[in-house]
Amino acid sequence: MRDNEKVADLIALEELLQVQFHDRTLLQRAITHHSCCVETAVHDSYDTLEFLGDAIIGAHVVEHIYRTYPNATEGEMTALKSEVVSRRVFARIGQKLGLFPFIRIDLANLRTFNERSRDSLCADVLEAIVGAIHIDQGPEVARDFIARVILPVVEQVSQEADINPKGKLQKVILQRTGNLPRYRVLEQSGRNNDRVFLVGVYEQEHLLGMGRASSIKEAGKLAAKEALEALRRKNG
Amino acid sequence: MRDNEKVADLIALEELLQVQFHDRTLLQRAITHHSCCVETAVHDSYDTLEFLGDAIIGAHVVEHIYRTYPNATEGEMTALKSEVVSRRVFARIGQKLGLFPFIRIDLANLRTFNERSRDSLCADVLEAIVGAIHIDQGPEVARDFIARVILPVVEQVSQEADINPKGKLQKVILQRTGNLPRYRVLEQSGRNNDRVFLVGVYEQEHLLGMGRASSIKEAGKLAAKEALEALRRKNG
Image 1 (cartoon, chains in turn purple, orange):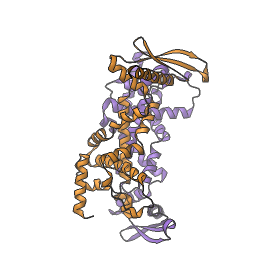
Image 2: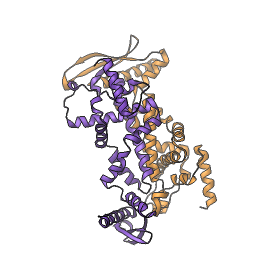
Image 3: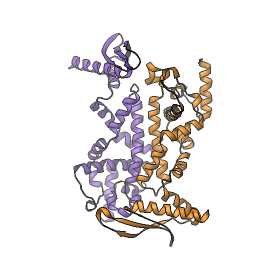
Image 4: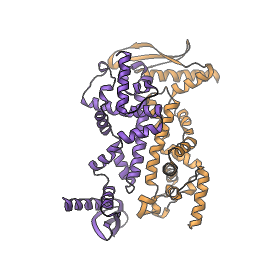
């Protein structure tokens, strides 16, 4: 590819990303697979930028989850994070954003290339672009990019995966009544390792759902699920 | 513990951390193990702050590695990161900082408690404190705290683990001569999956070391190791 074509490509990519780079060689690197530069991959391919971007995205996704789902347990947050920060989700975002045509790859240097490789490349390059933005533009621009391009999927994934029933119930109840749902342990039986808790979830004094499990956390989650199902039936 | 004792403790901890909180209940939460608040752990224990702090520390450690070892491969960076962002290292930092006496834990609620639990608590609380600083003080104060308390171990760990010989060699050669070491493929034999590369590392035209492996990366790493050993023998 000639140099002026390369530059035109990078400008088009900047428009897509809504970010103008000070140093376009960083953006160039973020879209370059190591098959294009076997001997100089450490400096010219996206590998280390991808490593950086992955960690930065992780921190922002976790912060977003922490702030958005204040009633989720650490286990629920971890589950949601690992659903979001996944090859599958990043590939979907990268493909939708239209990154693929910009990626520089030397197919002759690769053994196999299929639809999955395509997805995987888009996921890699999305992360590498975040790394490049962070280095070139600083943490605030990177944060804004992540907020615009990646964080919107968190709620989507959280609903798909049915991972956070207590957070979802809170949102629904808050919208309907202005109150927060409350959880109460209604019954506790067994002892030591065989304990069973029955937890109820209430809006004011109105029982919305109940759940039974070996921990209060899990029982509360089941109660919230039951409450959400009951509300769906009522509205459906 | 009476309320004024609690406050005195939190003030002492703030002095230790060199951070003054706007909302001390966040700091209080960061040092509270869920054994102290079984029923209200989601809001009163450090679990979710730890989850947040872990991700934030991860991002800063990765950025620091990226900036400090520009010649490291993604694999070397990943190895160094996982050495640094580990229970063992965080426990060491937390213990050295003197966090243990501040941690609130209800031993009667725990089955076993030993030296390892102590370490593990210090690691948890270090992460939770970073999460609390981030929420209470914003990303810059959190970054400064991490730079002061955690990042100094990166170089230490990198030397302990002998993980990054190319980076180390570069530093040594740059200090001695103002030049960067250069790597050259001297020989290439075999084919396809049985390739073997011989790589030499040079300061100007002076051969410092050689390494042989099935990838250029790995051969370069071995060459750097050999060079470092030769320099040590020369100086020892």
